[in-house]
Length: 155
Image 1 (tube, rainbow, N blue to C red):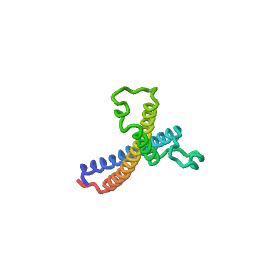
Image 2 (spheres, helix red, strand yellow):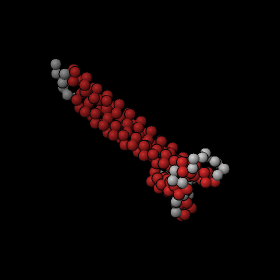
Image 3 (cartoon, rainbow, N blue to C red):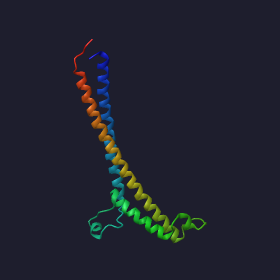
Image 4 (cartoon, rainbow, N blue to C red):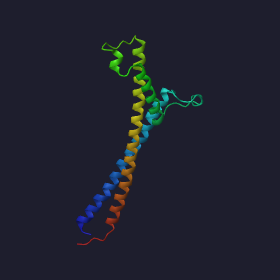
């Protein structure tokens, strides 16, 4: 192994360390953000469409699958009020004293809240997978760098 090859081996080893560190940060961020989103969902205590026995147990909407199911149902109900926001207003302005306008805005607010939870939980899964990939790649690079460093030095 020449001196240049030795420096390249050290660079590969350091790249592995960086990969493990950054991957660990990704995994940590994913876990903490998932916990934050799930905690926020549990605090809201949305139980719409859950079976009565689940509600009695204290279960709430707190997974991406449940949130998407409920958001889709809320969207369907909202479209029964008016197919679009423009159709709701019929060329006029939003009137918060109008019960139909208020019901529509509450539905769209809940729908958006639930879809945001779905997106957030999906993104944290992507970040987790990326972090795990970085750690595995970093370990492989680190091992390769260590093996290259053990090769005898030639001049």
